[in-house]
Length: 463
Image (cartoon, rainbow, N blue to C red; front, side, top):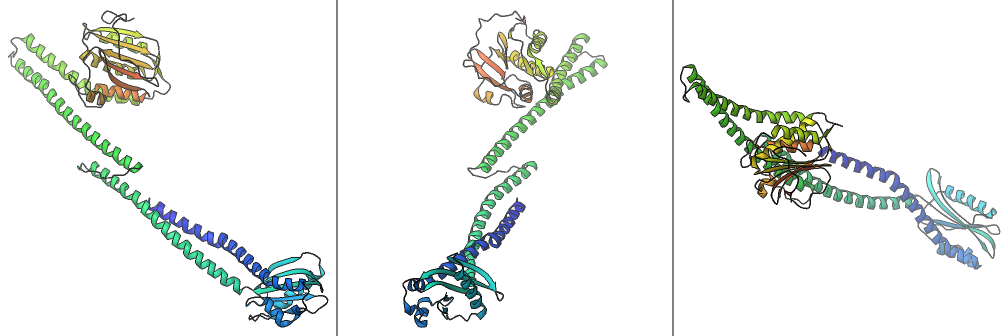
């Protein structure tokens, strides 16, 4: 960002240079010329009025010089009936100036148009400004001319340029200081955020102190929230790994000790069959725990699979899951109200998603589980105990294990599948239990009531 700031400052300097060289210089030249011609017009007016009134003493040299005296200008009159006369100012102009302007004045005297002519030219290698005005007098037509060199224009240009330059440079540095202060106010918190992230990566326990009401403040706030959330997840993950390690040690130790005893001809559980059953039970426990861990890796593959343009018939998914889960708890009645609708995504990923919700429902349901499928909406409800508010907020976070849960991965897998297929998932309490709702761009149901008067299927019988 520092390089960008320096580049921006360089562009500003280049812009100002171009502004002074081209735009300001041309406009200043035009302004100076306009100012000079106005001065000449102002100097000519007394002579014009005197000649138009026919005052004879206008041609008196002293009176003429009184009317047209100016330290920078020479003024004169040419007529056909009289010799021209000219003032002698304090400036010592070359004779070539007078000759050139006199020649232009006689041309205008012979030409009916224009009445006024003003111009800038170069004579003897120097700038010459002149103004001619043709008038009618009682003595005949006359041309009043005024000319001056470029000294006054140069002085005026220098004065204007210096004043403009000082004001512009002052304004530039003032704007630059404000800009640098503003950039520093952005760079400093960004450096704080960068240092904070670096220290977090190194495992250090640090705080980020940025109190701003703009976008950077929002980023800092979200970063602090993210760090807190990651710390919570890491703690939950460590606890889960610790619990898993402890849970795995027990069946492994049991299997090992029972196997060694049987090898030595000793039956720890009374007889050979009972002792082998203990080994098989612990092996099953071990398999279930490993299966849960492998499930997470499996779902990562399913979520990352290329499912672009693939749709799944959710009726087939529900029927498959219900058929396989009906024997889990035969005392739990499964109610289905299914329409043949299609969801975006792979069949296997949706099957895993529904299986996980069903496993959760079996864990808490008292008497029934109801599955409802509509266009862009899937709801799985049960009549288990309602969830605390803090549990609802952390429902789909990984490694957060609810009461009666195993490893805290099941619902986080659901969330991954749903989000990967561009749907949404939420858990909510109803009047008679809990409901998990997967949907896309449809309003939430106004009521959480799930009537028990629907047609029920007996122990997994589907409608």
